[in-house]
Length: 252
Image (cartoon, rainbow, N blue to C red; front, side, top):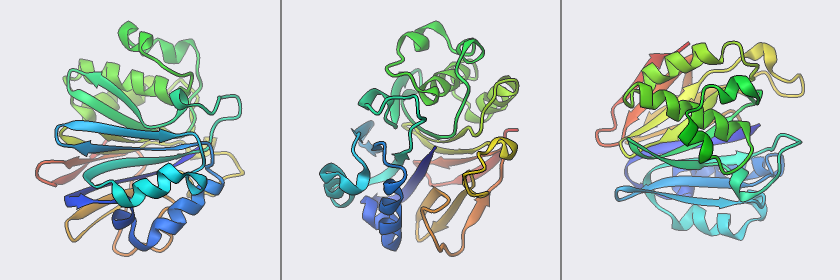
């Protein structure tokens, strides 16, 4: 269970500039989502990665990075670990993998039942590259397998993946994904599987485009947003990193 934030901008932004007055609210969420944090961002033709197992609100790395790092595209993650999973760097989002599309960075909010059914969706080479033991990284490997089959088409990959995940118990497949050419936001969750301890809007995702900046976020990240859109459950948002064009697509 985690919090997600992403942005695309015409000009490079720092985290504090992208979040503006909502930065304190985002940081405060790490008092609950306290099992590490991470950010992946575009720099030239590469994806840079920073991860830390400390809570963001106690991390010197975080406090320095939010003002010093600048990028046109980034995905950020605050982790609230599943109880049996270790708090360690290999289990800390984002995960970055190489593919035929180049490097891909991935963050996830939700839970997916691990086991043979999930493993069966992962190609052997991606299975061998798993670094940690989280369901999130395994879900990412299943996505990479589908992207290989769909020649990099995220819509086709997710339409197939959602069908394949149907018999697997999960709460949410919500994800934000950064590639060399796209920023992708996925909203796919099962309200009936949400823990009663969580707020009804916990898996909701929202987005907006204001003054050349498109951002997307989990509930609570922007407490009082203006002029925003709810990303429909069962849909995917694609942002072209070169043109800034935004499109939405049905996936489930």
